[in-house]
Picture (cartoon, rainbow, N blue to C red):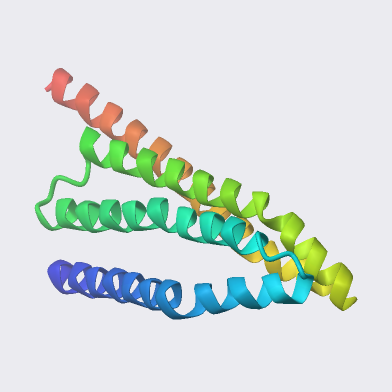
Length: 159
């Protein structure tokens, strides 16, 4: 049952990676050009490329770390220092994604100001907020896992 569950999660992670890759190939270039033409600032498309493609690097690293964590769960070594390190790297990846997209919020402001659509700023805050939630969740799991490992090691020493 556990292997089937982790296999399902691994497939879901891979499909998410394929979806983001497809969006990066087809949507990001068109989006950057459209925003640059809409604002009349043609050099802003390079900033959009840097922010969006730069955010995919830690995203794919976090997906790789997630697959590694799921393989540790399959091997019954989930309660180890390796898992704690993986959760820490996932936390840092989420923080870096959040930071990059927060740096892009002024672009959302420029588009919202020119289009007179203030709700667009809230749309721009979805990815940073989701990344922040993932970072907090990974930090909580990291702390809980570290405490469980400490309790396990204390119990092993007393027996």
